Length: 338
Image (cartoon, rainbow, N blue to C red; front, side):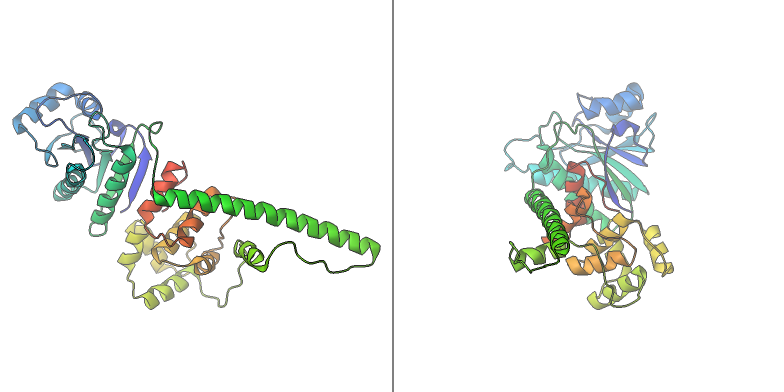
């Protein structure tokens, strides 16, 4: 099952287990910790927490969830942010790894995380999100579980990655290219109309170089398929050439195994557009290959849709980590892939 990043109050999220950013000592403080205690029933939860005693940084302990919409609360103690060079990242990774393993050991099908240590402990939100996504993504490559990463305070959340800059640059350049293409088309139409009216057409040279024309042509959504294979048939042909098995693809695409099975079992299956784009990313296709595969499901990239531009930027920059792409989509308030 996939990783989903959502905006919500973690005390209202339904999951088998909810992770709490706990105080190391058996009492609760401000932030997520207090919210979890109050929603669960503070007296009952605190009584059970006292029986556990001290929890070390990066370690976990389990209690009942009481009034929360969950079976368990997994308590983990995050790192106090100092300077980023004092072991904070190692402790944060241990929080996620140990919590995930505990949820798996408890037989959970789903687990919800807050952004651990980003409240009173002061861990920078952008770096905390990247760490969380990396740890969860690694776990899901070897386990089947729905993991919800719950971000509550979007107002103070800003994503800062190299890829974010590449995406924005690609979007800006594409929009400029599309605007020039549209203007050039209008000029050409007007020129043809004048020539027809005057009955004396004379070819005029382009104001733009051939490389620019090639760039505009690459944005075209029109497809000419070389064969009649369906989306499913072409996907399996690519998988065979790349030596990939089903597990490689649906995990890299952040797709639920049941959904992928539907595609597997029906050669005429037409996936939703974001599912098809996720599979293009998982197969590590280039732009032309991606356009070809999308066309077989009757889809095409649209330079007018911001989500499509993000995916096109990822492909153009050979960025095939679905979770990193979803970080950017989330930061831009767009739907996530798959």
